[in-house]
Length: 165
Image (cartoon, rainbow, N blue to C red):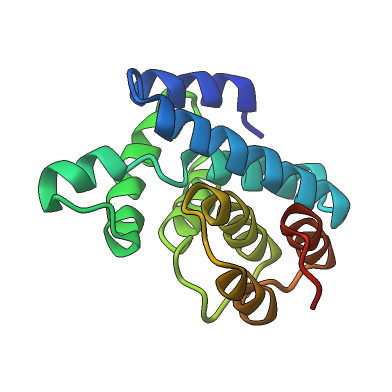
C-alpha cells in the first residue's frame, strides 16, 4: 500500500501553480474514496482506487504541450509515464504501479469495464466533471442510465443533481 497523503502532496507539487487541476483531482479523490467505502472495497483495493483518483489527470500538462488539447484519449496516454515516475519516487510496488497506470490509461474508456475500481473512478470523475462543465440535466440523466453502475454512485449523482432515474 502507498501513503495517499504523500502521493497527494507529490501531485500537488507536480501541478504547482494550477489550482484548477489540483481542485479537480482532490474532488475526484474524495468521491472515489466515498464510493469505494460505500461499496465495501478492501483496504488494498481502496488504496489502489485512491492512488488512481489522485493521479488520473496527471498527464494533462503534457497533453496541452504536445497536442494543444486535454482530450481524454491524450490524458489516458500521457498520464501513465508521469504516474510511473511519481509512484516510483514513493517506492510503490511494480504490480501496484501497473494497476494504477491501467486505471489512468482507461479513465475515459466507458466500455469493457471489468473491475470495480475502474467503474468507481469513472463515476467519481463524472460527478466532478458534470458540475465543473455545467452539464445539462439531460446529459446527467443519460450518464445515470448509461455509465453509472454502482448503487453508491447512482445515489450520489441523484442527490447531487436532484435527478431521478
